[in-house]
Image (cartoon, rainbow, N blue to C red; front, side, top):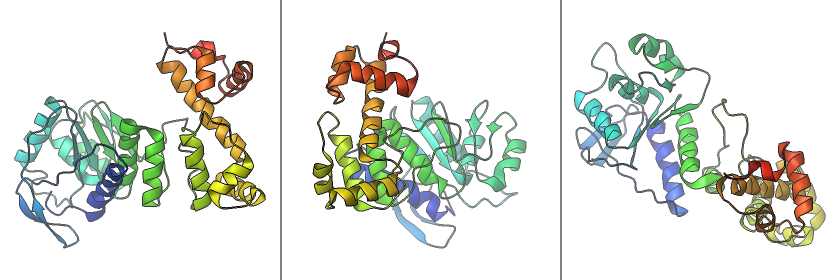
Length: 304
């Protein structure tokens, strides 16, 4: 959009690019209603922009927020028509900050939960009365439409979309690449253990966490994990507890139980097979730990 806010654009683009560098199947196209060159709100001119392309099911249209200048036209009709066609084709659409106005003008927020920059919330409620505009949240998903609050929350939205596409482990790695905290929108009560305990900057502890996540079915010793971190066993224990708030053994157990819960819900594997795949050598011990963690036996969580 003309006068796009740079961080609205750069934050999500950086997140998706980092995910692509780690093997996620994202291919980025930067396009504009008037291809060629657009001036950002901060004065930097963006060149080499392509025309609005055809959009297909499985694509994601991301709309970084522009600097709105009422009472003039909010959004060009060519853009709103293109966005509507994208959703009809089966694409997902997501807005950052004031980019929600594009979705509102296109009628895509009618009946949907959404959010935007705090300064625009009241105006959105007046201009789009059929939209269910929420405040005090970072982002909102409602069907194929996602919206986020102001500026930096575009990164939070991008990480959430990456997690939906590729799971929490890759998302945690992307967040570390960006040196940002993983945050939720406030409406979710549970956070995956793969995402918890990662809001620190200790490289050795991150290496151990990655190693545990990638080798959940293998036995580990404190001495072996200490070698991964390039620390002594005692040094790892202190560093891990200080950075992650739990011991390496507790962290490993939480990851294993999280994986087990997913396998039980999404596959028809037996409880014994799930226990073995998640690194539990004793199925009875696994049943006891699972019941303590989730308040129900593993058999109650099995896929139908």
